[in-house]
Image (cartoon, rainbow, N blue to C red; front, side, top):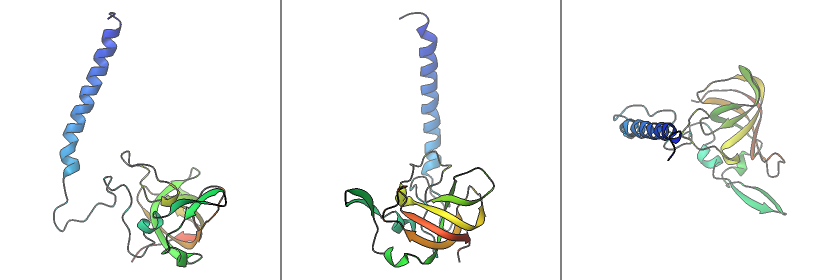
Length: 173
């Protein structure tokens, strides 16, 4: 082994050891359960997806869409529970993924998964809703609620499964 490789190997070993210690020290914190009666956190990285909110279309139903082959093209296969919502005014809760810079947004993606969670996997089209808002929505790192007309997109060229149009900021009961 050459003398010039030793500092690099020592640095690598030090970083590896430091990472191991950080992991070991944070495991007890991650394993803690909230006390009985305590409010559950808004987002739990061990479950990844935002929990279903009463009064909003459940992400568990939206994300149940699968991909199928239809006339030689891949497209969504929507759960039967979603078909009656086609064209209806609904509420959806999720995280804003801005398409452009700014404090307020009229066009954005709403996601079931937090964009600021480094431990969460990225969402596919079944866990995202394209939003075209009639009234701009203020950006937040916390989940927001929007209300608009839900469109189930059977064959959108962009690959989007869901679009919420004429959307406005809303709240849940």
